[in-house]
Image 1 (tube, rainbow, N blue to C red):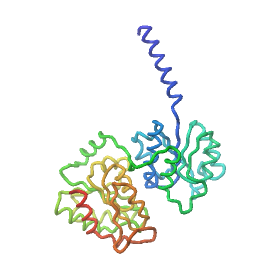
Image 2: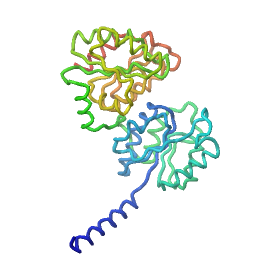
Image 3: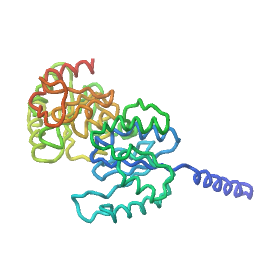
Image 4: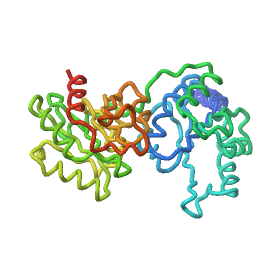
Length: 344
């Protein structure tokens, strides 16, 4: 290699290393449990990334499963797992000693800023102890009765001057979407429908007969393929099997044996989703799929925070919350009417 090219190569390496040295490192702390809670915060996390023109790191609970659906999303850098759960002994970040360990763990990253999406004094102290100078957080000691979405709007607007208007967004590569279409013989000539028939609790699981009525109606109008998304619990499997053993069994693909990461490109191939209040309603809407959310026993905000979400509530109710217990009052005719309005 000519000497001048060698010198130029070394100079470029030095220049790049200096640029990276001064790139701001930002941490976002989201310690709520579950996929839905993490997805809800994504527009605010994306706004932080866009403001400072760098991807941000996330500190999240293990059961948020963020590593399975945010690993291709360009505004996310590293996902750091919060090893804390008061119901499980000997986790690294439990208790007072665990807080000190977490501060030491975070200190290694040398973060410049942190945005804490809760009102916890604990995380404020941990951030300070880890050496983070710029701390942005929900108001301390305001957790009781707090509207977490409004608190998130206020956090970003008050600290960055940004009004967050976007829906949650997660990304999956076009290559993986195409590969999934080929592998599962997904034709865009069919109406591909994700059915999120699972749920974390029995009061959220809409009976199989409700889904079967919708499948019967829409199959008379369109050539359909149904993708059945659920967990492995006995009750969820019973609903899955009732649908799989129906007249529509040849038009169904079960996703219960696939990881969330494997499901993403399949969901992206769908035209529409009909989901219980389950992780798949959050994932499909964040993938840009119009999602009918069946809200039987959870605060309505969890099925309506995105413009891609179209909530259906139980007959006779004006809203829905915990203990509404309305899974048997979700009207399949209302779902079908909403479905037609989306696909027509």
